[in-house]
Amino acid sequence: MWTELPTLFNHICHDPNIRAVILSGAGSKAFTTGLDVQAASQNSILNPSTFQKTSSTPASPKETPLSPDPARIATLMRRHILQFQACLTAVANCEKPVIAALHG
Image 1 (cartoon, rainbow, N blue to C red):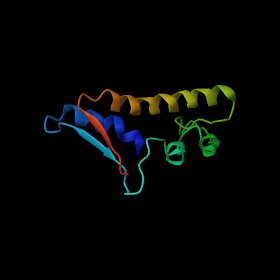
Image 2 (image 1 turned 135 degrees about the horizontal axis):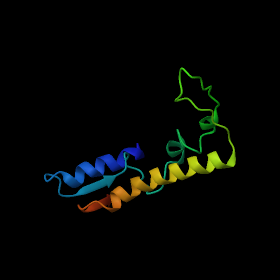
Image 3 (image 1 turned 90 degrees about the vertical axis):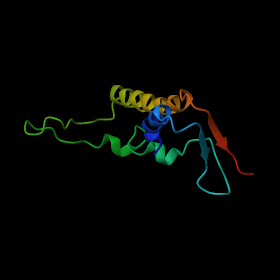
Image 4 (image 1 turned 180 degrees about the vertical axis):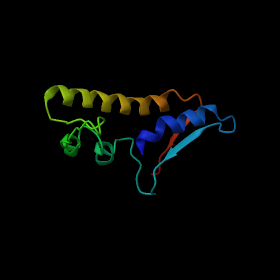
């Protein structure tokens, strides 16, 4: 869900009918500004299944084998960090006021 923030905030910034953004938690007991590590690690460098090997054949050249060597890990980690940073930057760069509504 957090990867959808850049698209969402891009829409918010360009919609003249939206004057402000209020972020709140889904429940009434808690709100956190922290990261849901489990959700963030799905399909990322933090997920061990990222390194499952696939076979590459001339019929399907898009499939490439992944191995957990340091260079591949570093490249995937960099991509993951840049993707996550783009999500946070989208909120920070929003031209509309962004308010966190806290309960309690």
